[in-house]
Amino acid sequence: MKSTAFKAEPFALPFNSATTALVMIDMQRDFVEPGGFGEALGNDVNFVRSAIGPCQQVLAAARAAGIMVIHTREGHRADLTDCPPAKLTRGGKTFIGEPGPMGRILVRGEKGHDIIPELYPIAGEPVIDKPGKGAFYQTDLQLVLQNRNIKTLIVCGVTTEVCVTTTVREANDRGYECIVPQDCVGSYFPEFQKYALEMIKAQGAIFGWVSDAKSIVESLAA
Ligand code: C5J
Image (cartoon, rainbow, N blue to C red; front, side, top):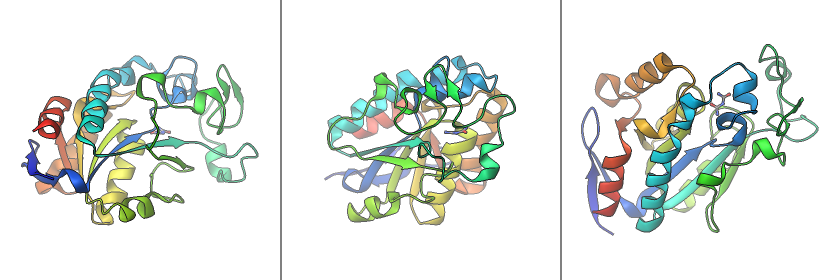
């Protein structure tokens, strides 16, 4: 496999396609579609839906390049025994486990918990079910990555300032190099989007790199 570099800020990130994985964070109906948890919390889902098209481009490029693709879903067991009591009290008006328009909110197996059709996993792409915001917490993600000798992560998904950056911080501490295409991540709050991305690449890539879908697609195709 060829080695090349992603065009990125604050500087280009060298990568080897054999040791690179795409991690698609929580592109679930509950966060992205009208009627889900995100909207029930009072958010406008159009702010996060803008990431769908660029994510589709990067996903297609990753599949074409043969790099590993991993999807994550935030959610809980039906009996909520894996949900910290403190998390159950959050949300203001709508709470995890309560009935919503797409089934019980953030409960595994419910329609709203599933990944949106536009980015649906195909055979051979692991789906990591996570009870927390970070994709490493109480999951086998690290084992999956180690078994494939993965070193570099392209991290896409929602929301930028919560599950995406929590995962990038966790990954960075574990020695992975993370690159975030800015148009492939979404937040309900434009200012959180802006500052979350700035934080990643600050101080000489303090915990990662920021790029965009076009650059990632070009580098994967090179
Ligand atoms: C949130 C997530 N925002 N996937 N989850 O609760 O970012």
